[in-house]
Each structure stands twice: as structure tokens, then as C-alpha cells.
Length: 429
Image (cartoon, rainbow, N blue to C red):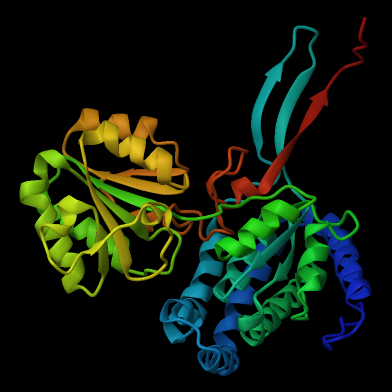
């Protein structure tokens, strides 16, 4: 077994990161060929280790949270950072869910025979080494590791400095699981330093070791990754998500969906940031929806029509329509029907997740077809923008680009493909 990596701050970061990259690249060759049963044994052992190490993980997280509070972190930030028994249990359960999913590696997606008798197969294969750069949420350590492992990829994890202790405690459990299944520990590497230069080295590809980067965090982090990365990126810059209440919406349904979309967890990328209401039902729907949000403790910033229904509504600026609050704040606007709603979303949205509430099938189909977002919903909360809710077990992130990975990035999206060609002596004339 290779010697453990040094974790001392201020050590030779370039040499450390190069070593991490080379170990991950070597482990990728082993993991790509690992049988499903072996990967599943590792995932089962990882889940068991997280449950067994709950006290250690909570103790480490408590130190991270205390440090973040002392630094003046917001309530939304602390919510993303904090762990409790329920969240640790959910982390372990997520590993079990991923274990139960079908292994995508080796699946023949398509097969055909050419006129010359050659058979061609398109087969799913791992991408290779996935670099994940993330902030605050320590559960990403387990989620990303599980998805990469099951899809045959090795992972290099660089969590935020604010969750450094939590990530180390979780990673120790994951490493224990890998040892149990006799898989290389370097298949799941955690960058053992808070030094920010490590991020730049990952974006440069670690001397060709990293095949793709997945950033999970705030706008600043994602913008830096998209600007500086020398390798492909699966990412979204912002989650400016909309709920549009159509003229054919049931008010009770609209109330339930909107409250959940905005207030279930305000700090997640699938939280609604803008409410759009059809002018045709503004007289009946707008006030109940706005009052509900205000009474729930949500600040509402609205246009003139929205301000008229409740004096507590603050004026919305032009900037509000393109702001991801990640807090108990929402912008609200009255629009002239579904076409105007689609136009607003196209102008101000981030191609992440948008929802229409309506009983009009034609309006719903128009919205679903014309809104150019990774996830579009009809009569459902935007907070379903989550790999677990899609049946992926977990997600490594939400991608809003137009490459093969769009929306929640799960097992299938973490594979590429190659062509296998079977011949019987054919040559090309």
C-alpha cells in the first residue's frame, strides 16, 4: 500500500497535487475494470463506516460550524454546512441507494450490423478521473465519491475550507470502505490542504490526470472554474429558478408548490427565486400567494402590481430579476400569459429549473417545450431538481450546459462510450 499523503499545511503543494493526480490516474485503470460486486462491497462498507463514525463526523462538523459562525457566516450558509444525525443517516442511505442502482459500465447502448457483416457496439465506459471542487456542503464528499465509484471513475475531491474537518472525517470512513473491498484508496482522494492554489492546479488538469471538473458552490467559484479550467466542465453558474402560476392554475396547488419551492430549503440551487403570475388571475391568486410567502418569513420584492396587494412588499429593481438569493427572499411579477412568462425566463433565467402551475394541458406543453432549461416541471416544486429525486441515488451536481450531461449528473452522465467492432476478416476496399 502506498504511503499516506501528507496533510501538513504549507508543504510543497505542487508536488502534493501532482502525486494525488498520478495516484488517481493509476487507480482509474483499476477501477474501470472492477466488477460490479466489488464496487458494491465498497459502497456497503462505506455506508457502514459512516454510520459507525457518526460521533467523529459530528464532532468535526461542530468545529467547522463554530468557526463559520465566528466568521459571520449567514444562516443559509450554516444550513448548508451543518450536519446532524438525520443528515448523516441520509448520507449513508444515499450510498446504499447508489449501490442498488444498475452499473452503467459495460452496458451496450446500441448495436448494429453493417452490410459488410461487421457488428458495431456502442458501450458505456468510465470518463476516468473526475475532479470535484465544492463549497460548504460536506455531504457532497460522500455523494460524489459514491457516484464516481459506481460509474468506475476515480474522484479527486476538493471541499471548501469551511468544511475541511467534516470532509476529512467523512473521507476517513470512505477510505475504510475502499480498503474493505480491496480497491485502491486513491480512487477517492481528498485534497488534504486548505491552500487555495490547489484549486488552480486542479483547473489546469494536474498534468493531464483530470478528465473533467465538476464545481458545486456559489457563483464566484463556478465562474472561476468556467473561466480558468483547461479541462471540460460540468457546471451551472446560478440557479435562478421560476414558478409561473398560469391562468388555469388551481390556487391551492399553486400555494403548496410555491411555498415548498421557495421555503423548503432556501439555500439550494433548486429553490425558486422568482414568482410569475398570469395577469388573468392576478386579482384572485396574487394576494394569497404573496401574503403566504410574507407570513412564512419570506421577503418579497415585487413590481407595481405585486406591491399593490400587500404594503410589506418591497420594490423590485431590475437586478432582482436575475438574482439568485439563496435566502428567504423572492422577486414577484405579473406577466401577460404563458408567452410573457417564457420570455421573462429566457431573458433573466439561468437555464436551471423552472415550473409551471396549470390545469391547461396546452399551456403546460408550450412551457415544457419552449423553456430552455435543464429541468422543466409541470405542477411540481422546483426543489425536485435533485439527483436523488430523479432516482439517480444522488447527484454530483446540476449541469446547465448542452453537452451529454444536462440536469442532475448521475451515474449514466458520468460515463462516456467507446465503439467495439466485431469482424470476420473484413478489410476496407
